[in-house]
Length: 181
Image (cartoon, rainbow, N blue to C red; front, side, top):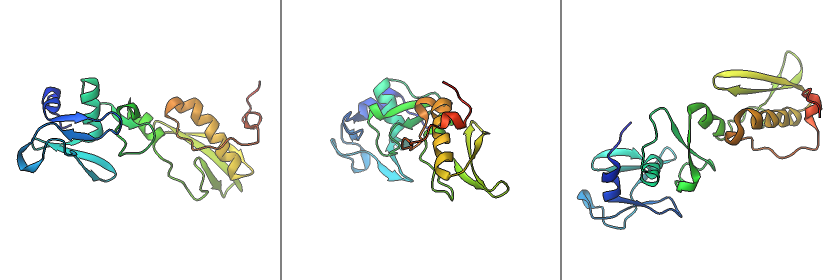
């Protein structure tokens, strides 16, 4: 990963904690003026170039705010899922599995996360990934039930990193999932 010494970052940049925007502290070569916004959007993320080194703005914000670069085996997760929201309060360390759990849904044909039609059984099935391993949750009469089951399990498996985009359902799926209590 591209990195500069944090002292160098702090010499040239400041973070607006309310907005997460990086601003130049002093004039720099190639025309950047003191107070100007540092960074540009590409592929949904803000990138910055400091002294010829291209950096991800969310990693720079993390480094300036905490005084440490994120470990190489960790990623920075945007808690609210908005990749351009680099406010320090919206950033957290995550391993790859946690970061993928928190990612916005890639909705299949059902339009609901965790629910897909099983042609062989003629029912809706629900499954979830933990790491790279799929976990079968069960079969359901409706896609909504399959999605609700996914939501329940996601909160247990992924905890604070679950991005279930679930609306509370009227049904008590614990019974269908074999839970008691």
